[in-house]
Length: 365
Image (cartoon, rainbow, N blue to C red):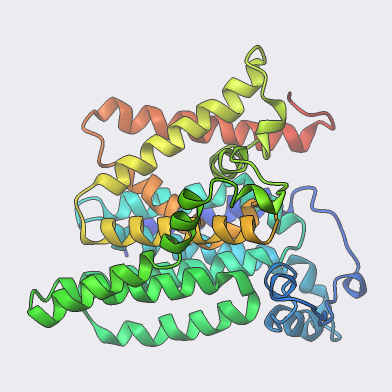
């Protein structure tokens, strides 16, 4: 790693930390401890994290003397590590010519992500979930690129810790292992490899097919749940991932200039770059698309069946994919002007919102 890239990454991590501790509300350590929660149904177990002991253990550990001074900033530490991991994940996602650019952009987008900043400021467990997911993404890309089985070891370790932290991550973990097995085998180009790839893809789609068939044969199948769910929640998820204004759908006013700048402009740029990054011809492209779609749709169906609102935090495990692919979209642009203009506009709007939002008490729009 070149010295200039070390310097750039250090600056990105520094500002990422500043954005998170700026006006961070103070919560006494004794109020931040978690207890194990009982559950009466499988959906309570999934959505209330009733059987996820890892974060409560950390919570109680850092309530000990001397360590309790660190605990209020533990989510910031997780995010700082995540920003560094995103750099290496971005490097793995692109070729040697553009790997450093993609890596720095990945860490930069992670540092200014208002969604991650919001979670860290609220001392959320999801900062840890994001960090573990970022590690899994990094080693998954490594094993696909290098075909080296040794990377299965850290993947499995982080998988176990992630499941013990966040129950809903089971979809991400299972589909990632299936996707790795499928595309790992595909590269070997043997009959057994092709069979393994086909079988893996069938398993990736298996949770979705029965639900779709049932919904098609019985038009009232979805309606029977009387959901607090509608597909605007998908729009909310995407804007929360890219926009500095969280839950921007609540301010859906076409005459509101702030809505167009802080929600629409940033979301359009982010989604456009992410799609460009996904279409960039790499082995990891098909793995990323498969993992994202499988996890997203499975979580969507689970929320429908559980009569739960699709909250953005439920899908934080696939957020590292969006960040890395968005960064990967910049070097894939043919126009040098767009390579500079699009990320600059995105970063300028986001950082401006962060600064102003921390300096004034009223919302920008």
